[in-house]
Length: 367
Image 1 (cartoon, rainbow, N blue to C red):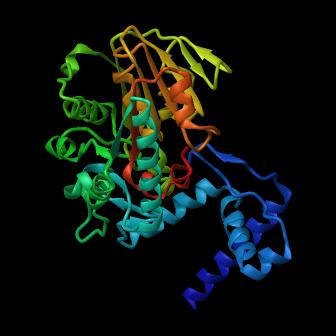
Image 2: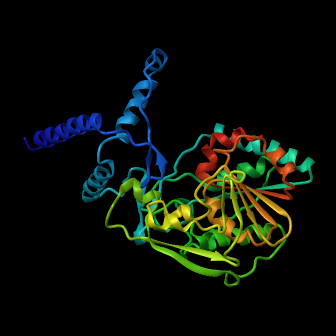
Image 3: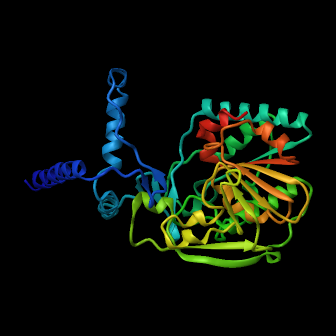
């Protein structure tokens, strides 16, 4: 009887939620989850026959459910009370870590991405420009001691090895991160590495080029906020989770930064307006833009093909080059090799977190 009452209650909640959803406008973007939400799919015969419409309408109803964030919290707390340590693709780890699950990927997509990068590397080599790939492992790979017992995860080292076998010049930062795994190199509530983790990857990149990185003390450190809760937190929305600290490292605080070919120009790589909102990691280089150019006082021009991991990493390069260019292939429409030639690029770094790199279809289309 009790189970029937519980089931009836949740059915009534579902019906009430769907009814409320009809009376409220759809949301386009979830600030807490840092992603666009599924919009109402178009009803076509082809979509119905293929089954895609059913899948898309389910995603739409889930994303647009009223008070979605509150219901995520309720679901999380209920599952935590039952003893679950894997909730909504997030592991509850030791020492307050919430760690994104990554236990599978498409080998076909990975191969396509690597082949496209190799072709780009060959075109750039013909222009006298060297391309290096830095695939950055995530916390689930580097912090196994934080995971619950027997937590499944894919071997990210295998993806690094695939890149080597493709003939790419790979900067393997995994040993450097493992050597500092007892330090604060990943956020506890977000999928990114911290600025400290980014520095160790920067030092490994310098070593791969036969150079020695300056010690971290050469940069001024500044705690930008101490109330950060990131994308991993948004998947569980657990109010008992402690906050993270975002730290900046800079030699020179002021730089001319041009976004999207002059569409917006700033005087710093840190967009502090984001610190008062939910998307605080966007403080680094104004979140994700198609193209970004940062002027520095060094020599040469570095181009970084990137996901959001590079936004934090770039703070260590901007004073080293005359210009640091960043391209996000999800938004850039053009030829990278042409861009490199037109802008006098002298060096290219491809920097992605490994799970994102393995599945990003935009990499396979790079020109």
